[in-house]
Length: 391
Image (cartoon, rainbow, N blue to C red):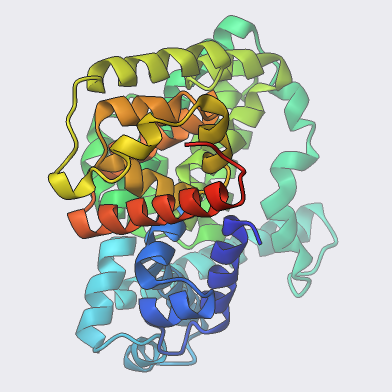
């Protein structure tokens, strides 16, 4: 089983047990990992710690129940394993920017307003009954039903100008992931685009996702925008909705990049250092910066001698047997020379991913580094005993 499948199995377990008691230990045992390695693997694959992911899903599920009016707030808090109503309210406000009570009132008013609007439009322009739930599905998909892709056509230079908006959306995504939605509030006054300001404010206000999508689409479509102006607005809309949903920043980058078209892929790769030339430059810069770096401590020097004696073929064979989480942890405490030796023997794409993970996570505690280095050594001995490598 590929390691990402273990993570997906953990995600499925979370989704199936949102209202049950779930601990990191129970999650790890479910997929047959230690808590430490499952935590690292989950973080590497999703960009989010498993228990943070669990809490976010519980808050989103709780927000939907708040709209139903069937349960009171304390019952919802207990259902989703919050210790108290106060604890639930604090967590909810950190994520949505308003209390559960305010959220329920706000969405009740908005739902009434939108219903009145649809009733008026439908009575004049279309025979669709409000009792037909498909009307709300049509609102969700309208952007993709009006030749939107033809309207997105713009010059290469215009697309390059739109890259700054893409960068800003990804920056906000990363900040929200690490510090919560409320950390984005100071950004509102710093943005130049009025639609960007409005979108971010609605996100922080905690507008329910379907209403948020409809509002933002109305702004984009009613303005009659084309070309670069429409592209920028789609980047903002899809970016804001993805941030609300907690989509991983790397996935969001790929999704938003697709709106530029396949003729812009090369430019996107250069912009994000994912083309071969840029990856090589990043790898060389990291190696040059860390070439004289010593081991983190005496205890984390287990890889220095054996890996230093291995030829490239044997080293590459070893690395194929080491999962990314173990490898990143193991080399985070190694010397710059050993790090360079390892990074030169994986693909440039893999090397850049390892570098980014080391930069993001930093140096792990010594015991975790040692445990990972021991796993590498055990794998090394196993391969040597089977004569798959030479030391």
